[in-house]
Length: 277
Ligand code: ZN
Image 1 (cartoon, rainbow, N blue to C red):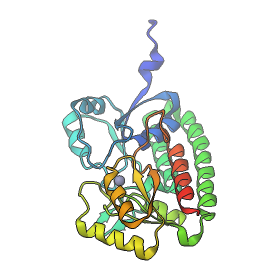
Image 2: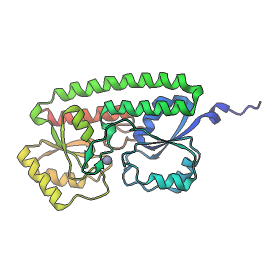
Image 3: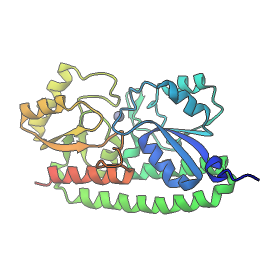
Image 4: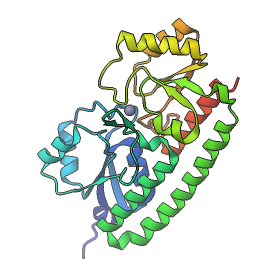
């Protein structure tokens, strides 16, 4: 035997398509895995352009964790060009997708109950890939799932304190549909479930009318979107800017939302302070 630190070398190489999945995997995999995230903090997974280095990351991975539901349209070609033999793990397997016309809404992680399904899928994939770590993955997942249960209760409590008539907001793109269904806040967005296409002048005019007739108190910025559209809508309607919501991406370590749990807490705090009075 040599003195090479085998522990570091033996870690299971995992690639996650974007930051929220990376955080789930970190919580389940602990120190048995080495996690690489393709779409980093404050970046938009809908319109990502893979870098040459991403193919190498995928080629070296044992598992590639993706959201699915059409979120990572750029990924199949990347996997193919990398020649990777990695197992592709679709973290939304088992979640009934919210449908918008013929499109599935990919933002299932915005319901904490769904986040638990993501975590269970990631746990099962890690166990299948690394049997030796099964007990560790189960213990880590159990501990994290308990935190998510507590988080889900917290969201319900906090939203429950917002007067019913004020539970409506404007967000930039339609990323909070699952949150809306789970927790009872109405979200209206000028941009659809993907950020790929810009809203039309007609879409924006319709939103402005809705804000006026529905007396919608606040509009929100997003960390992944250009703030100018929301600033304009706010100026035209008098609906105030309620802050920034984190929809599709975590922040860096020193930001407001370096983890999924921080992200959800940040969002409910921003929503309650803008909507409560
Ligand atoms: Zn999105």
